[in-house]
Length: 188
Image (cartoon, rainbow, N blue to C red):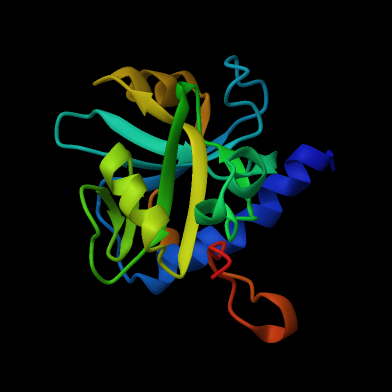
């Protein structure tokens, strides 16, 4: 198995568990798994957590593309010192922006609900609030993925993606020493 494909499969348990733990997700939230031969190089061998609104506009992040840099490495100062986990490549939209997927009981600003208790932060003010008071589980992304109304349906119909709608139906593997798998911690 190719290293990038192996990384995709290793990244899945934590995200599937997050979906399963959050009970039944929003009917508009699902995973996309790129099929072999995906024509778009941004999405080859990728797994994308996606939510789609009532207008069929879809937004999400690639969950299996860690970079080799963290916020602590990229940004000077005490504020970022605890953020040592890698930033992930989230997709080709707004590559210079910082976005986050996080679990929280209370929403610290504007965010897209992916599943109950699992959110996607796209607004700079929300990212700033998360940096000031990070939740226990957070993963940062450079860029995000987005599709105009009807665009994703065309890609699925063309055969570019496998779609997994019911993440809660998939068995999640345990983490180290039998602990449940979980989202990346903020380092706090």
